[in-house]
Amino acid sequence: MERPDDFDSIFFNEVMKPQKIIAMKKHDQPEVDPWSDLYDVNSTTEMFNITVEFGLDMTVFVEGTIERCNPADYKGQVFGEHIVITENNNNNKLMIMVPTTIANWMLREYQIMGEEIQKFDEEINKIALIERDLPEGPENIPFSFCLFYKF
Image 1 (tube, rainbow, N blue to C red):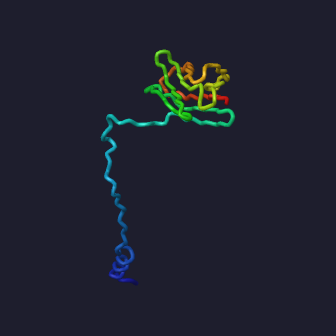
Image 2: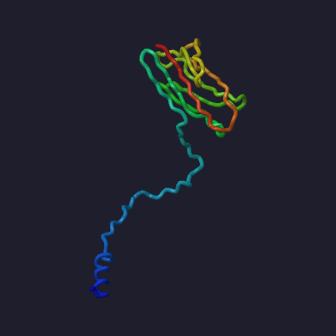
Image 3: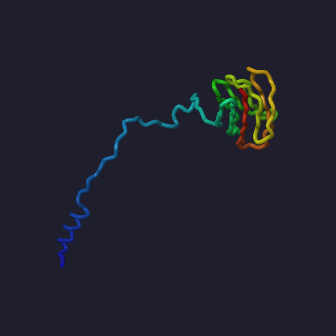
């Protein structure tokens, strides 16, 4: 039978003996307050994606979301040519401005949000304005369209 003093010494040596403590790494970066400098700060948010497939013909596929509560102009580029998507609050329309020519490819057809493919026979080296009605509601509205360019 063990004596109480033996128990205390065994408990101290096995359980309470000093452990090796590893200190946490300290980072030399200064602490940044996320709430400072909120005003006059420009930010960029990705609201739509542009996918380009090309060979002799080029297909530009654009998909994203229009934010109804805080509408903005969404801008992207394909080979340096601008694509602009915006919402016209006055008549509740989605307005898409696309180049009729990108490099040596000319816009010949387009398809918006699963509708039928539309022919396009306009002048080259211009900007085309394509409009579509938007559904009613305050929420974000997804959109997609394809532009078909021929060489």
